[in-house]
Length: 283
Image 1 (cartoon, helix red, strand yellow):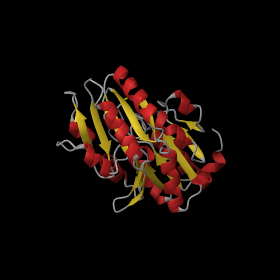
Image 2 (cartoon, one colour):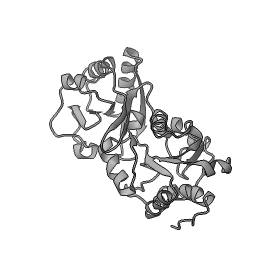
Image 3 (cartoon, helix red, strand yellow):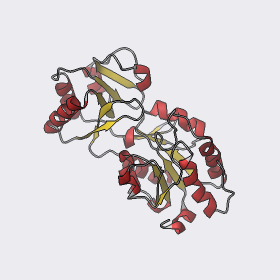
Image 4 (cartoon, helix red, strand yellow):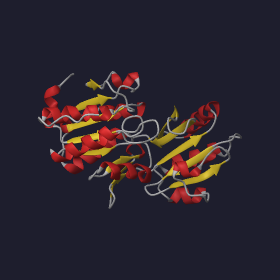
């Protein structure tokens, strides 16, 4: 394990949700719940950084007893229950580029925009999409509504070759966004993730730690997937769970022996408890 001395000074732990804290059935492993209670006892703050929208992430945050704002939508939103600390909306140019592209492509697809408060669907021509799984309201949003609604992030679900076409066309029209195609662990199909070019989990971590008066060296992060890579650059100690992608493991100071279905995140947190001479928490 690299940099074990850093663990003495950790004041904030930021953990990914899907694939890190949650098991295959999207439940928090019991050992994680027990371990975060010990973190509270020794005065270490902790929160979630996730690609999910705020409403979905907040349910898990409440179960974990998180007391500080959480990072949602991959860093475009930092929010607590009573206030928005930070948000980075998509530009008007980006929204128009998305509209022009998806309405010109003749293929089944699902398009959803997330704001700080809700999920808005301007276009849905796929029958296999359950709106409730995306936290989206049942009535469609208009493009005019989206232009004035300060959406933070957009997802497009379609066949992979269609997504590649959409991505290429959008990036040819605007440099205001980054757009990547991912397989969805949560939903089981491919999606195109479109967000402001400067936004990622690292930005969310930086905004949060500065609001709390915490230095980068005092932050520990735990993750598993590609959208955690930037977050690993904004921490003094970096942990990849056993099921993490190789690119993340290559950046980690510690790789857990247990995966997300076995409480790998709890194993990571026990490193801090051990440095504080606290009792380790068993599975």
